[in-house]
Image: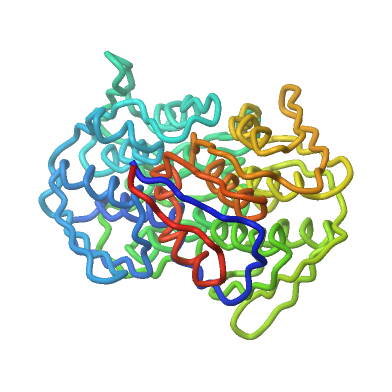
Length: 420
């Protein structure tokens, strides 16, 4: 396994180009199997999660080819309906094949998904939504087994106790586009990847209205065709590097990002005391002491992203005063706290609330990434810490960040990937 060795304390200066969004590319890749025609998806990133998804689709009979950052998908031979545990366990988004296979074949056998260990994330809303469309679902030996004589549009309410579910919205959309009649999804996710998925499906011949709002209206169609689509820039990657500029008290230009997807993060960074300006080719982030503590509550889009909570926590650990972070999406998403405290942070967690008392400096230490975004947060902590930090199990980070250590090294970070 690889690890990152970081000698911190260096302000980052320069430009970082943002790659294509992981959380968009994954559902688009799965959506492509709803037709027999070839689809082309461009601006993809070289990520472990995308490679895992492609491997899963190949098991189902899909042919694919990657040239540079362009993915060509030929699903004409997709006749498999079983997504095995060995592949699905690697990431949670694998469960998207459930809705797509129901839409394509009328049946599916999918292992319960894996991915990051960030607390309980049940898929009951996924299954409820698909059952509402007419699927028969049973659970056997760790697998979800679903079949349907036909799917029929209906009204589906998808909000859970922590708000709309991105994954459930994706799964129901993938099945509903091939259902008879009209499906109305209420309390649908408004995340950017849902809007992009709707655009891609519409370009394939689907009829979806309301993407980006809590109400999606899907008019089922009998056939879809291939399409081309360019993946949007990754807002979580952009937010991560913006915070990297602030935590190192540096000056970074974040290129190729969509500002409207980052408004909640930008607002909090400005509240902390960062100087953020918009330029023709990106967003410039500057920071110097003194910075100020803030209170943050994560929420579904357009609120502050849960996927940026560990990174902003690392920053706030270096800001004098007391900050409070309330996790409103995944209440157990604090596995990174113990590792930050090993680096000298002063963070206490009570249920879904973390109280962060800023310290003058973090101190380098050996730490371990246990999930994707928590791992990114530890890297940011290491960039600001005195002495050396070693982050192990960086395969978690590779799931969602393309060449993180190279991008950071290009703007002055002392970071190296070392094989253990």
